[in-house]
Length: 271
Image 1: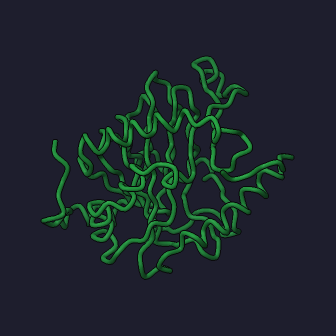
Image 2 (image 1 turned 180 degrees about the horizontal axis):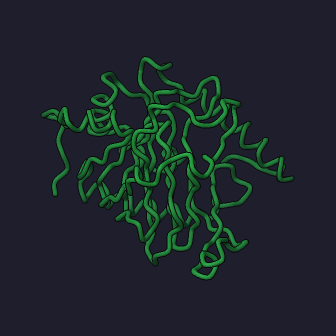
């Protein structure tokens, strides 16, 4: 399927209504196979960056490995898998092109009703066995964290239940933040959402799932033998602080250093 163009309205009134009502929207074929393949190749090259992939590097994220036996016992092993570059576009020109692609910015402008500004980015690899993420919302009550934040999750690989696709919960974004606004990040307690409202964001390469920072979501472990790579691009509305990217870095990295120090890890750096 060819990627959509920006020469016509990209979203129907029904799609815009669905996003605002449910808190998320899947838009198919935003990017072409050629564009997605270029990012896929770049992601493979990044995995060879042994100069960067280090447990002390604040850019890198790690997840416990979960095997079938681990899942049967409701746990995961102590082995950690490299999973994420946060941020990534300064390392990856193809990812940077998608982050600021006119097609993506046009879609975000239609959802916002105004221009979007890139706030943060990360590349999540989610290799086979990676744990996934507990139920949470993306908003954190920091002075410069935009309440208008919308994440565009760009699928590099097919994303489905087998490899731990993101699952969003419809309608809860209307309730705002469901955890304390204390400047920390909290998982949502069991029972916060009705599982009947769950919607798996199953994607093909080039598809994009949009969801706001108050939309509860989670992802299960990757129990397949396939990778589930997603480029996460998060923007804010122009009227909600304009370009906040540098301000965010000034808050996020000190927060990470503090979190690492709580576990006795002080020899950290960002590279």
